[in-house]
Length: 322
Ligand code: AVI
Image 1 (cartoon, rainbow, N blue to C red):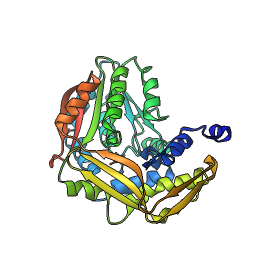
Image 2 (cartoon, rainbow, N blue to C red):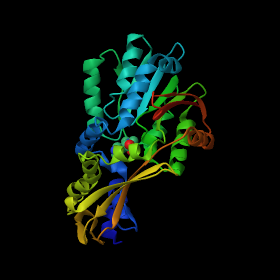
Image 3 (spheres, helix red, strand yellow):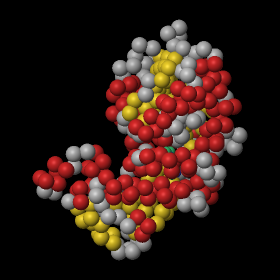
Image 4 (cartoon, rainbow, N blue to C red):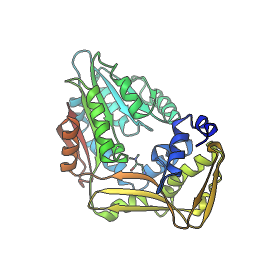
């Protein structure tokens, strides 16, 4: 790598795109799906009938609002409700509404990597739940975790919905959970959603819908590299491909080159070649069982206090303590 290239790799986006496209097999991280267009596509995904995760978590939050809120309840000085990866906050609103209507003493701190998502969430909350005190932050999970250590004056309730943890391989999930545990005091709790193993077809359908929304979401990462790093990916010459391994519970997304291609990424001083049918791995969406969640908790020094599930048993939200 030349010094010129080095100085250009000054953001983690550039650095990771460079690494991912110059390694074999190639990869790009799914955390870069979420620009304005990506946020919108993800909202469309959540509204698709095939993407059962959202409906299941909705059902859990709606059916068990009261007991969940009771786990959240702090002492006289209330609690901070910190949501990592808040997105559009649609599901959280069920809890926020209940907490607000029942005079719980709390501040809602939504945290998301997307400025766009945080802005529209804050606006909507002001309109729909004006009594809820909202104190948003922009940032990546791991960077924000450091800041969480400062919120120690009262109980912390950390919420991670949408099975977002599933986008991390087990070692990184353990690292994430361990770091979360390190920010937690004795009374604090973690409330987290984990999509469960189920019929493989159901999982594959959720990630390879016929309307092509998931394909557009996956390809959006190339659109983003084209725009932000002045590249010339021929996006339509890549095919979205999904696999699900029922043994490991890992769903994997790929972009597959349908022909020989040469791509230039000007901002990175980089030209790369694709053989026909060469892949870019973009995302994993891990599916869990109680045993695996138990193991992750154990490895991270957390304890499972209870869990809530939907009527089909497709999805679970667990309450963890340290
Ligand atoms: C955000 N994340 C948990 C979603 C998932 O299910 O892995 C992202 C997604 N990818 C394709 N469809 C939805």
